[in-house]
Amino acid sequence: MTKAGDEMTWKDLEVGSIITEPGNASQYQTGDWRTQKPTYEHSRCIKCGLCAIFCPEGCIGPTPEGFFEANLFYCKGCGICARECWTKAITMVEES
Amino acid sequence: MSPRIGIEVSRAISIAVRLADADVIAAYPITPQTHIVEDLSEMVANGELEAAFIPVESEHSAMSACLGSAAVGARTFTATASQGLELMHEVLYVASGMRFPIVMAVANRALSTPISIWGDHSDAMSVRDTGWIQIFAANGQETFDNVLCAFRIGEDPKVLLPVMVHLDGFHLTHVIEPITIPEADVVKRFIPPLEYPLPLDPARPVSMGAFGLPYIYPEAKKAQQVNLEASKEVILRCWQEFGDLFGRHYSPLECYRCEEAKVLLLAMGSFTETAMSAVDAMREDGNPVGLIKLRLWRPFPFAEIRSAVKGAEVLVVLDRALSFGGPGGPVCSEIRSALYNLEEKPKVVGFVGGLGGRDISPEGFREIIERGMEIAQKGSDQEFEMFGVRE
Image (tube, rainbow over all chains, first blue to last red; front, side, top):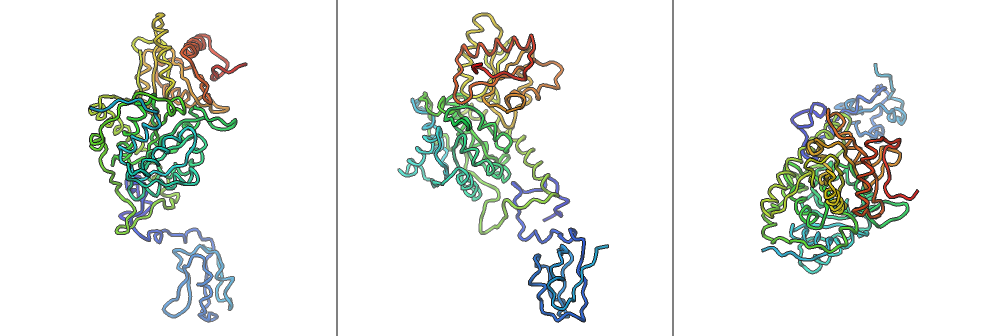
């Protein structure tokens, strides 16, 4: 894509709004829907990855240290990870 | 020399589709469209037309199958009427939004209830805003010619839009008319092979019909609007070239005896042929009346309408569809709005008639015109009148 989606004019669209670039849904920032964000207390985290399994966005992955954290570009702040976490290592806080 | 033969108009349409060398036909039978697809399925079964005929279980499936066919760049045809058109309604928007040049013959028929298999334009008007090009034919030859033109117009790289060719149920579908059938090689030259720019192709994957978020949906709609409007130029060029090649000329609207006319009648479809007799008779009596036959319904020919009514004092519009609780017929409503801002314009009087196959005779058209003149002069407390309804 030569332009970001919200910069495209009607003239930039392919015929029939056909999408020629695979996987461009990944460019869509769903993170700005969020009103709460997950915060992490690594001392409580046992690196089980249950939060990643439950995340409906699939936006949680391991950090280089092996902790699991959400990619805030996509995280919608639903709080499922915080609710499912065995050890209460995740706390949802209001976005400022 | 092209043969001129007596043939049922429905069967002539199937010949036009064969000559256009359609690749895929997906259709569900419904009166009065049946003979069109019946003939096509026979042609495919007999090997006279190398195409896939997809028998489907509903019109919704018919149009959905057409989407798939058009998506790979195959020349696609279907036909339906009335409730069948209603059943495919939601898919019609997809066809135009995805810019698929599907050609569909619509054997115009009234909508239920009461159930009616006979003709009027309520089905055509209900799909007015689906983004298809809509052409109304007045007779068999016009229907045949415009089915050929529909492929050429819809598939033009500047257009790539689906096209409906409307013909009145029974009044056209089931009558035998003399129709000139052109030679196959001339038609082949007239309709070049379809080259859809981004077809489904494993070598070049694309996503079609994707989600459109609020930040892009209005842009997509604007593109569609500009595109449909711009199709008019291609339609005019196509009709010009068709005329040069086949000697039969078409235009967005046709004026019949409009010279010096003070009163004009505007109608669409096969009823215009009857209205011509009424205009002839009234002219003989010295009444300065004329007839406008509106052929191109979408894109709407604003400039042509405005210029055609110039000088007229009264414009009587006959609709064969009713917008319940509204301003009358959709045609009259649009014509009125097209003329509203003009400094000089005729008084517009609307009639709704010919619903559910009710005939209007030449005398009936005369009555409509005369009553229209009376209303224009004296005014009326009604937005429109229903013609020929027993009180």
